Image (cartoon, rainbow over all chains, first blue to last red):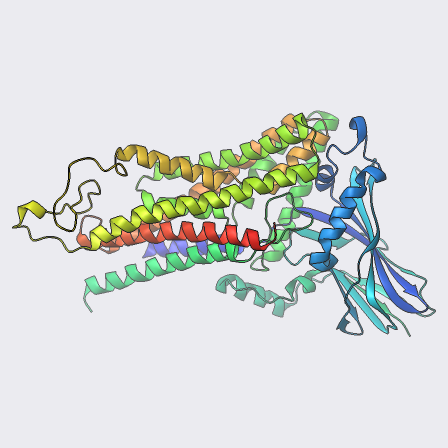
Length: 209
Length: 338
């Protein structure tokens, strides 16, 4: 029995180590206003150098870096397949989830200095709305992709009415209650709750008068 | 309660716990349809849940990936740091293989379904891990390096390898389940009275089996002909089904080294990852063998009739698990819309 007792933690440990991001994305986003209403989010997602090498492999002519034109099919495939994942973006308008319309204005650029690829695209909100409080997060709940806002000023407001304010919050270290939940879920093998990805994700908050 | 009853109870609980754990690993892997992440490398990895030690693991993983790409760049710019890359890749292999993956489930199930010999389990784990590294090198080397293919083609190739490996797991599981189910049924048949010499059952001898009418032919049954060869075939199938699906990390580091013009560094990194993965998988195979041995000891050893039944039942359960895992993976895959 002693040996079995020794095995148990090992089994639990092997169960716990599950999430493993393979792709890292640095995010900058523009919140686009028209006539004082939020109408769209324009994303610029920069991939890490390894994934950038993968996604642009052999696309440039004669060993040169690929041009935006050469990368257009990649941008299209990416944006089309992102629809099923709601663009990994969760926007909330005055506390309610806001649905998206079809994406537009997509392209991919390659930075020759950094050797990184950046995907640009706009996702319009299905309904533009007067917003007192517009919040959005970018994250992959399966954690294959690790999204994070870039340092500096990752979120900008375009054409915003007077008096709108913006703040970006990085996730705090988990509250003690959350850590407890994580520990419990580690030992029970159950998920700590579907909102966990949201809790760990960066958050942009736009408040307008 | 007598000591024997207690032991039996303990063994039963142990077997249930083991089966539950294995089923859980299968569920975590298989029954959540692996939706195609838009940024996948072609294999359906990373359908993870937010369980345990999450923050710590995420942080380590990201450090690893950054360190790996940093090491590749360092080799290119300074010419040094080859061993840094190899060491990092090795650690990545150990670490990355720590999650439950279907490859490990197949190896563990094989160990429970078939063997005794720990050494063989370790060799099988090693070969499966090496094969995994080799498949990644082949996909990137042949497609990207020789044929000049883009990400889309590499992704597609990796997907086909993945479908084939899932189908392989299901087929291998079905074959094992059939064989182990027969062995279990034979064991469950009550031993014939010793006085009837014509029908003296030889407990546990799969080669010497009487039909229901007690007679048997001494023509060799083709399915049991050459038992060592059968075991070899099982071992080879285990290596192939457990090891043919490449890991995203290896593909990424290979493509990145190729882009940096030092493909050999990527190849070395992929093999170092394989060695790391082998160690983790071998540890799991070892646990499977120890667990089975323990269950057998607690039920009075493989020599007793009860021990024999427990052994056959465990083997059959493990075989069924491989089959279920393969089907779940395959089904999940199709549901995900390919």
